[in-house]
Amino acid sequence: MRSWADRLVADGTSHWWVLLLSGTLWVLLSLAILQFDLTSVWSIAVLTGFVLFLAAGTEFAAASIAPALTWAHVLLGVLFFIGGIIAFAWPAETFVVVARLIGWWLLFLGTFQVIDAMSTRHTELWWLRLIAGAATVGIAFWAVGSLNLSATLLVLWVGLGALFHGVNEIFSAFEYRRVHEAASSRSRS
Image (cartoon, rainbow, N blue to C red; front, top):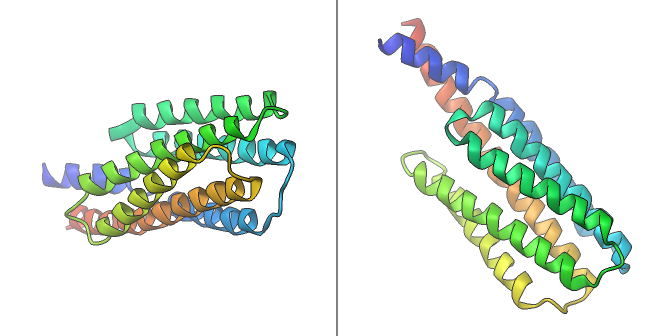
């Protein structure tokens, strides 16, 4: 029975490298975003829409490789996709709309990162995911509380959110790899 469970765990974590690749892309995207000097509502809307669509794709991919929380990943993916459509549909709206979208995105992202970290307290790097999630929630409250700030701050929120998301995925990838290798070696024994 143990061998069957180990094979199941090994199969479920065999795609750890997808998280590593996705996390690396998120970090690179965040570095690119943090270099932007955007001042127009249209630029902010396009950037936000792109990031939200990328977040939706990441969540849908996570739903296919993380069966325990499939519903949560699908729900977040749908919300991110809807947010991306809204960002493209009303580009001439004020920065308040974009700040709220980003604030909610960061709040959901940070909340799920904190929940994920707390549910994996027995792993080595759980506290790093907890810090990233708490920082993301803090930025979300800052974004929602300061709706009339400049475009530069909006870019900062998107960039830092992408950075925290990427770092969280990289940490998760290495944890999945460790679990995969342990389960693979046990199932062969």
